[in-house]
Every structure is written in structure tokens, then in C-alpha cells.
Image 1 (cartoon, rainbow, N blue to C red):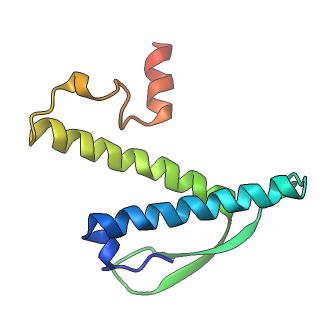
Image 2: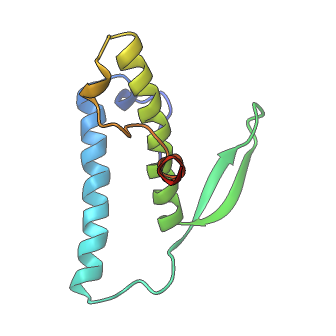
Length: 115
């Protein structure tokens, strides 16, 4: 679980270590599946907890590991869009310094390519 206000939010070394631990966890899961020659036929069920307003009430919603990883990857694109704006507007990073579609939602890329 994510610890709000944890050191990984303010200290680069801690953030990098957190990323390494998550990466190791995901690699271990993939290795276990490969070693047992299993193909995941059904999604692995988890419970996700969300606050949907300023009220501290949390809602528990059923989800899957795969769905949550997909959501996290898609949400990261949103953060990359903000990084792009900050880098270009505040740090004056030239636009060509980043990939052309950096921070752009895949659906937006597909839509623009279809025009």
C-alpha cells in the first residue's frame, strides 16, 4: 500500500528504491507464472479502495491486478503531461528534447493520426 506522506514522496533515493521494489515484485510474479508454465486464464482479483470526495470515507471496489496495473500505466501518462508542461514552461526545455507523443494519451494519438 502507498503510504501518504512517506519518505518516497520527498527523497529521491527512497522513491527509486520504491520503484525497484515494485519492479521486483512484478518480475517475481511473471517468473512464478513462467516457472509453473501457467498461463493466467482469469484475472487475479483484488480489492481497491477509493476516496471519491473530500469525505474520508473509502469505498471498496472489486478489481483485478491487471486492471490496476493498466490504470496506473494510463494515469502515469497524465503525470508525464504535467512534467512536459513544467519542463518546457518553467525549465525552458526545448520541445524536441522529449518524444513527440510524450504525455499524450494513446487515444489522442490514435485520433490525431486518423485525421
